[in-house]
Image (cartoon, rainbow, N blue to C red; front, top):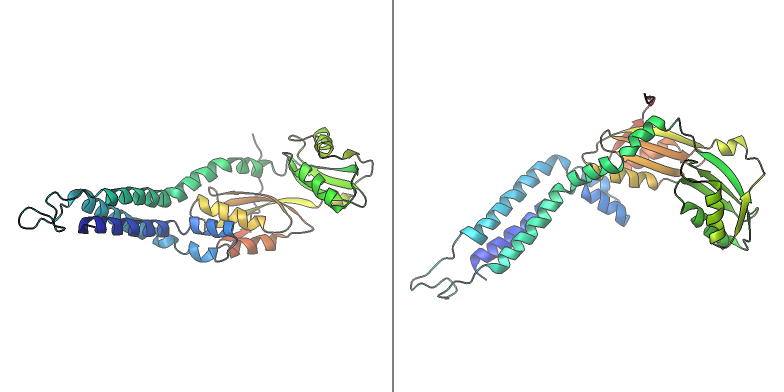
Length: 296
């Protein structure tokens, strides 16, 4: 392998490494969260060094292109190259490696910005949710179930209900055979729930038993102001951290503004647990006491 090819391959590999380091502050915590590995907060500390890693990556890529395309192989006396060939071999392998490394490095570096754009578009409804969270209250009903023969049937009915859009929570019990469902009436109806349960082999009907006020009031929605997020990837990290807290029904996290709108079961989760989970992921959070603005 010619020296030029070796140098272009080496610089390509180094550029991939520094490119990954440039995105470690955002992609790293997300990857660790998916794998269920701790230590995400440490990777966030790479963020101040991100511009330096990006600069070094571009310098390495520039050097790689120089060795691959512009620097001519050394020619010895007699018109042969350093390998003794009269016609120097073209650096095809080095060029392929260089272009592959360039794509990987560039995608790694811009991925935080792509995640930010995706996060802003995907969670754009969170701002509307912030404004209307206190205006659109979810409803809770009880369904009497027939046909369940064991605890395994409870899982079947639960999955059938949770597979419907608009279901916030579904608590199914074997004794008594009943399902207490909290849902958004604008997205799902009682008839759809009964049909979903029938589809998995059971019968359901609206229960005449009145739910207690305590059961109907054990769901709350709050907003947390966040700090420390540097890109859209951080929004995913915060959301994943919140999902691990028992009792969280839904969590909508936005990068701009840095905010989380959370619906949770007040009997299973509390605000301090949420703040600690976010802190463990490497960010800060506090209760946003600003009242949502009413739509004009």
